[in-house]
Image 1 (cartoon, rainbow, N blue to C red):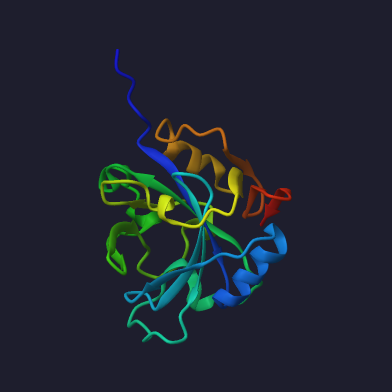
Image 2: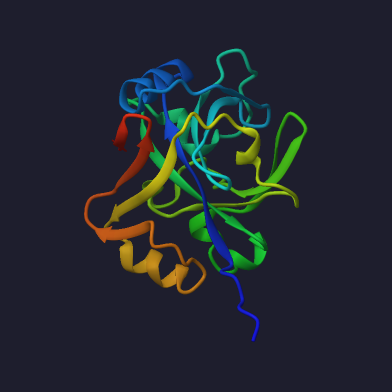
Length: 210
């Protein structure tokens, strides 16, 4: 009997920062590695640095690109109003059918839009107001084009994803939506004030990002 794979898979964590430089410094100080540049997102006026955490997941540092034209709409990841220290602000799940995954959830997740970075084009859920769903506790969802996962083209630097704990007062809502769509013991949801905490294996041992 053929086993049906889960509809959703863990894809990446996003470290939000006022500038990519601040984000790179935070990761260097915490994990002991430098995160290389990724690229820019013209539609959102943002840019990122990227670090592979395995063959199919990664860490993204994302911030407003000071050299890009400001979009006429709110930027994603709530970056227009982000003023704090760099932090793990969002988590992203990959879907084989993003529209099917988000049926009935657009009020929370936002609509699916097309995004582009260089020659890479993908689909992603983004709220029209730019805010993170449930302050970052509810995952963003994306669908990559077919082929090898993008993490395989990123620098890894001997870092690996261990776990992600999402604390939220809306844990029951998130868990109900996930149902059996996600089967990953590395992802843990607990009740509490909204906070994302990731554990990463590094050349100098396990480190915690929050």
